[in-house]
Image (tube, rainbow, N blue to C red; front, side):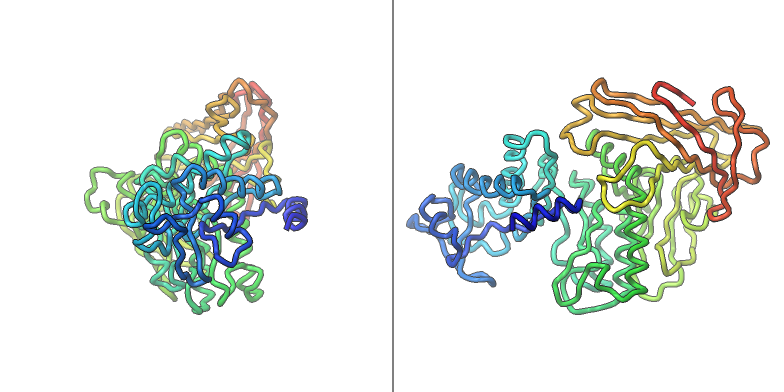
Length: 474
């Protein structure tokens, strides 16, 4: 196992281990757990044993200090071996008989806070023993306030069906408003033998525009793209690539959530608080402030009804312009779900790479969605080293602000840079792509110098290359 973890890390793969709070009576750890008195007990104080689907087991008493220390030391050893995160499964706990007793009370009294305290154990362990590492804590169960431990929850063993997909956006939106912004689902669905490539791809298409992109399923039907047929695999590959390209925008959403608590997935009534008809609407949502997303929830759909909040919106894939404040029926496509960008938005993207270690913050593909009706707009891009816990609070960050002003004859775009005192700035190269211009600009000026723009026929944008050195505002 140690060599496997070492080999994976050497290849740039960050292993995350599935762990569970059960100790089987057949486990090498069973007698140690009994001797250390780290298990929930029966009424007489003996280790409580019961049958679970994988065998006869006991349960770690997560509320007992000695048990917490014992459990954390297992994790600590795994971190030292090279794991990059912890996946806590079955932490409701899935089976927790009423007769079991913990130091905080009987099973029925503490059942709902077990997962919360499990996440707390891991979070506090990292803070104590690995203070310079951001913990990755994926948990199936939590409680109010679990977000303070950085918990990443998911919606459980959801049915691998169109019905299973249909409720996922609503679940994520509701949980986001309760503070748990990283709620997500097993992309493609988890349970059942239903093998439907259309369903699989529609789920992954939705997955690009929600907090965690993570296919996972029972072994009955493989969830990894590499095991699909060549056509499905190629389509899935493009979605994975798009997810990586979205990293600058998505990372900025994560920063905004960290700073203010605002969810990354937003219900439509965040855009129009006065519109009561939007209060129960979840079939379309905002991904951050500037993306509008409508998942496809039925097979063979040729159109989708979309409510466009007030403003101007552009189809992310075709550039089609839509007026807001109304519902429209829009055509669907096989390779993507309906996604729209707010007029006036600045959308930072990056190139395609294999993992986040290859992300470069000195090359930015900035997309500005021009519309003459949007006279002024602002966007932001957040950077840090991707590793330091609480980098913003430690002044180890960079916050770039982009502003536009539009009049009859010109578009003015400026870039300003706010640096934390402990952050090392670098020169940046922008490929500024301006969408929806009616024609080629007569003049382009960067600072006081004339420049040029090039028409890109692939996405019908005008491209301006800009270098911004530390301290410059262009």
